[in-house]
Image (cartoon, rainbow, N blue to C red; front, side, top):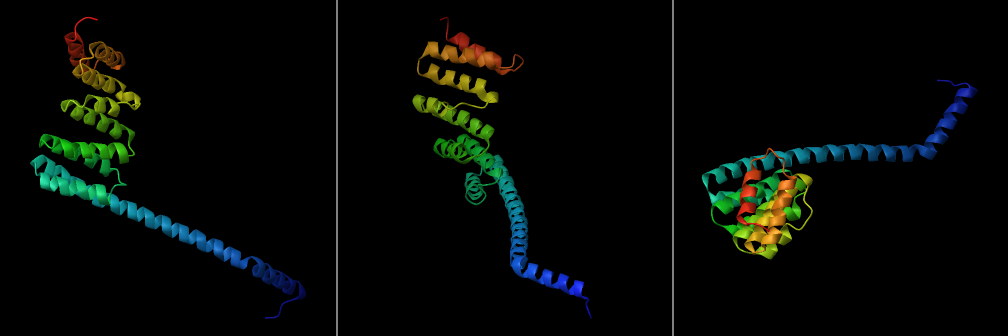
Length: 210
């Protein structure tokens, strides 16, 4: 096919432009395609991890309900080891801790709760774990350790519960005035309609007057 002079000049310009920028364009295109492939692969991996974690969590629920601690240990261990990055991991640790506590294995329960505190990314679940761990330590009369667990600033929704548990620990230590202040703080922060108010008021009344 014959080209006129203008067309030939355009072709030469195009060739020169491509020679200068072609490799850069191909490189950028390759990076974009690789990034898209990597993103899709990561999304698939995340979905696969979540699906597998869900299956293990369901097995954990059944084991906990049946009181089968061997299966609880296996299922919870699998989730925390292989699927720690999923949302099922902290929930599995909390469920396993409850099962261990019911079985009288406080040490294993504490380990599960500590995992949620140290590794869980969910602030609310970590707050729940701190409350429950403080309760276990209170039962063991490890008062200072329990207060240390409650020492961090809780999410606003947990402030009253933290104050209540702190009151329990302080009462256990025989620090009546400090316990009274903690219970009063809990009552001040609680919704007036919550049933928990009556139990806190009973504990406050049991401490007697100032």
